[in-house]
Image 1 (tube, rainbow, N blue to C red):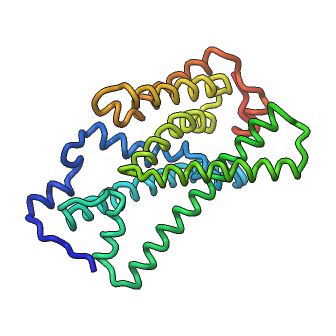
Image 2: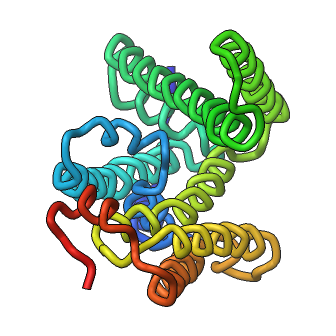
Image 3: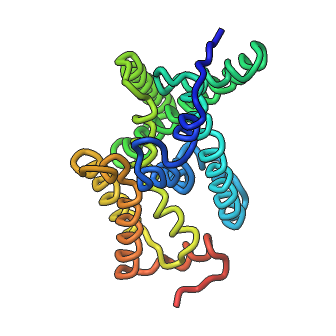
Length: 277
């Protein structure tokens, strides 16, 4: 049984009014950017879009997905966290907010269904990430630039080994009991969004974008994200994604503009009958 402490109205307003006690507006907006716009750069989140039949469909689904995730981030996640803090202001681990809120708001059976869904979503995400990482290492790196003659049996064995290694790393992080798991998630999402969202969006919507701009923007953007996260003071160091997205977008555009045009075949593939000027 979850016991909810009484709390005065001013305290409820403090917890539920943005940006929150001790959080700057810059960091509040940076969290929104990470989990809305930045979602377009999360590989495991957009891989389902790669099976559609046209780039027009991908563009529409990207816009709709960003809107829905923005709604979920602001209306559900942030308010649910505030509600959990209101229900137990004496202090709990932040990762326990959602279970606490669910148990307090719902009867036993519905709360069990909701929490089962949360755990199931986490498991599928972990599984998708493991497959994505192992495929990238084995197929896109090792097989592409190393052993091109890798047999099916060798590929399966190597993929299984890499997947197991990635799982053990994740297990080790979990057993170390980090103070707030969400900090790791936000850090990873911010880096992926900085590296992948700019070339993805520019590649779909700007015919002049090319591989050179994507490479430079991704490399410098991710390195800048890590360095700012380590050394920058204040809110920028806590949430550098806004600054690094500006850097990544700027370099993508600048380098693409001063290097060669994409090939006519690429332009026809992504933009139909579009011809470069």
